Image (tube, rainbow over all chains, first blue to last red; front, side, top):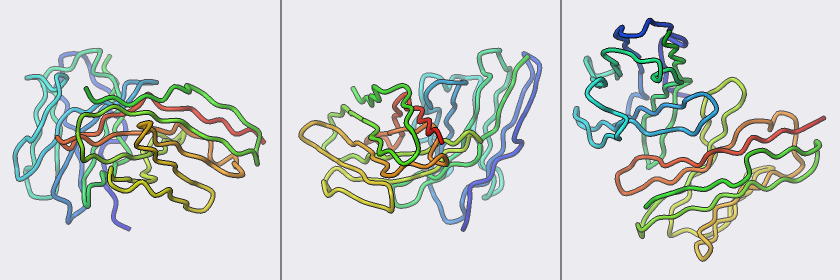
Length: 111
Length: 113
């Protein structure tokens, strides 16, 4: 069964550094999403992406964040200058038939 | 405003007991979808069920069942004859007209042997 995959599973970075989180959505899906979950808290929407552009973004998704689909298979989330409060689990999802399927997540730790 | 409330922060039961997880939602949309996801200790989010707002039929899948009541804006989830492997955090979510998922805070379910 096709799955959403994410790399790396865990990323440790220093405050102020740039990180790129990678996702490979399920191949026939057209809508893609990033969510984050701070430890022990609820899942929060970051951004949705369709037809090679952002459809919606939340207040969390400020100028430090960007998304890209560079090659038709990968879907990346870049954080330009990480802050301590960016430490969280980041989930990618892709959607078909009104249902979002999630990757296993990348745990980002900012020191 | 769109909102999902899972009032039960944590539930602990003994194996083989039945348990119901509550979910109440608020939305102004007439067309919407409701979901349940399971987050086991390993951390991934596992899709369990999708319900659209026009389909109020209850659904059963093995030991899992869901009760959608539009009149009370609730979408409750029952596990019958619970097992230790059911231990996880369960999230209820609402998909709004912008396609994003709005999540409840989750209910941590502990099944003791």
